[in-house]
Amino acid sequence: MADLTVKINDLKLKNPVMTASGTFGYGLEFADFVPLDEIGGIIVKGTTLNPREGNDYPRMVETPHGMLNCVGLQNKGVDYFIHHIYPEVCKINTNIIVNVSGSSPETYAEAAARITELDAIPAIELNISCPNVKEGGMAFGVSCSGASSIVKAVRRRYNKTLIVKLSPNVTDIASIARACEDEGADSVSLINTLMGMSIDIEHRRPRLSIRTGGLSGPAVKPVALRMVYDVAKAVKIPVIGLGGISTAEDALEFMMAGATAIQIGTANFVDPQVTIKVRDGINKWLDEHGCRSITEVIGCLG
Image (cartoon, one colour):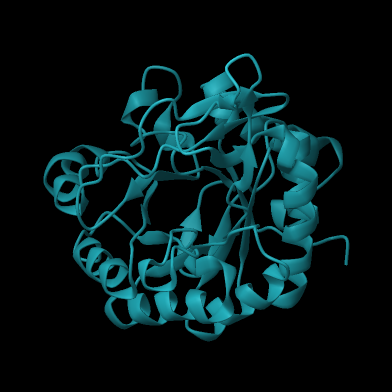
């Protein structure tokens, strides 16, 4: 069996397969389907400083080769996570990572500061695709200055591994990745969802309550793969790839493009055991190709 361990800064993963935020709950929901401690890392659903109700229904629509969602970061807030969720997830023998969202640099930083006190949470992932209320709703992650402001504020108050999840709805994602690196990010993960829309032609209205939503699933994989390749060439910090991964072959493509680890998202809804199947498939491929370690294929495109 090949060595599947990888490192994201000081964060050691037993294998490169992680779950994407928003698609795996808090991990506990999947305990009956998959051995949670065999996953390289579980990124829990988006957590904000204060509780959020999310958007009105309908907020999920199936599309050819994917899905659209506009859930709107529904969660009970960071304090609820600390007091009610953390005591349970800290028992899982793998890396539990909290995805943090906010509406200002201050709310991101305060949520991160509260999480840094949790011994069993070794890292956070910042979702910078959130709207900047001071800039008319433009997402923080679509500009270098916006991304920098969040990472800088969080880095001042958070001293563990800091991953920044990048938006693909930009013209130059590599520049934004470099801006995050310059402010102290330990890693970047990409891509978040692509903005999309679906229309009910019989009722002549959008199928989502807020008209548009984030597209995920196999349809976005070629875009995600290209962006991972571009970013891996632009930064020195580790890159985590995601976007349409549902097989070991998909995962290996991302790693050959430069990703140190990968996340699986929408595929969890189709097959709740997909994470372990992908891990086993990666190991099988490495054995068949005479590779002793997964590191032999990371960034091998050159």
